Length: 128
Image (cartoon, rainbow, N blue to C red; front, side):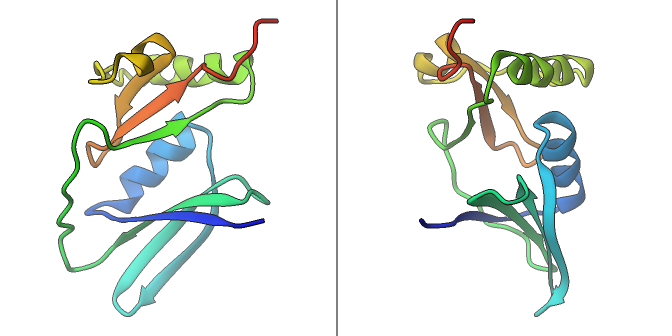
């Protein structure tokens, strides 16, 4: 088995940490401070085989992304999906229209605090 980490530099990891834990329900699985002037947080599910790493430092990020660069999350069941949708609506997070209509037909798209696109997909949820 392979472990996967997606790492991205940011101007404000605290906003990202709050977004991904409060809205998507991810957990803080690790953090570090002062590693060569870089601070970071790792978010995912404890014991999982993947996580997101967000870092910040004195150097501003230089991202280049477009409308097809998406983080896609597949909640495990309908109640988990509905809980995420409820939190999105409670926090008044706007839904954005994806370029790829597949994501609109199979879930919804929002922007994280760094304005990266995040898809919450119901595609793998089977009707109960």
